[in-house]
Image (cartoon, rainbow, N blue to C red):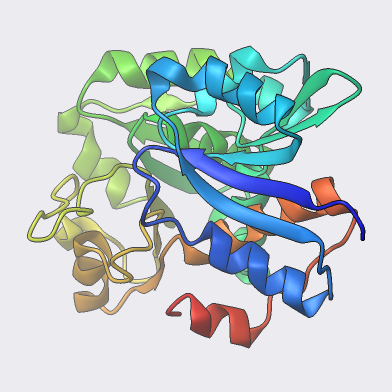
Length: 275
């Protein structure tokens, strides 16, 4: 019998993760019978020991989610360009006694976008990035690669400054009093904050009265599928997108790294995920 190839997603909290559904769907489709994908609760304070333990147990690869992406970057022996640029890792694998780290979030974000949105709403256009937390790094790097004119708004200005320094790119940092004006010139607005994740919580970072009628609005939150942020955009009859496609596309990139197979993102999978 062939040896089992073990992969998993780690983070905290992890119970809500859709990653096992995604990867196990592809194992079935590709008839990869000797492959498993699980979810493992791992706290920040025992990350390093857990990684070493999983490596010794013969685990082949790990997806890394909140709050472990930055420490996964520190733990990696060899880094991809995307990981080096974002100072974050969401995909680990073990080979020849070394830990390899990549960040497929930038690829996931870019591939989740319709081509027309990239051409007409992002390339050489004003784009507003809301938030300066961990997930904003991949989005900032992707928008830079897509030739966007980027402005960042975060309630703590210092965090926005640190974001630009960390990723090593140019961008404008907006003060609260500058936000309304920039919103009115933006053709693409993306929320990377967790505001609206909790039930009843409203993302009130921008005033949608100032948003142009042709602006494309994106929220990295995918559960709930219609966040308070996207709900406000829908009420203005704006075109919107949640983060589910990004989740799937970053998973596909991880799958290709580990298994050498480009999985198909089909309607059956999207329906399984509640799309």
